[in-house]
Image (cartoon, rainbow, N blue to C red; front, side, top):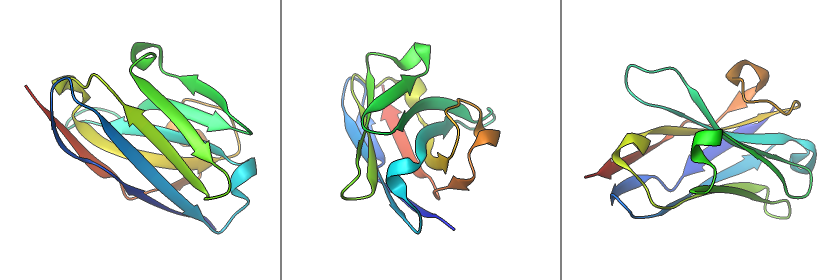
Length: 121
């Protein structure tokens, strides 16, 4: 069993930055694939980024360059640094843990509770 706790969301103006955190417990964190997803109202859950091992990363093409995923295996925490935020980035952001490198939500076994990010224009 894995527990994930998302935090760091909030209200920010367009062009601003936020850093999300996801604290994990209950499993060998360093061997898990950790991902970030987001879901806007009325839309499907969308892949943002994933990380595995010691610094390997994978991004949604549309977000590459503005978002940066990282992990601290000593703290069992994964981060999502979001820069140059746009109103269309408004969504609930979720971290997830799984054993497979993938952008598909169905390939992740455990999910955080989500944290709201709102970007005002």
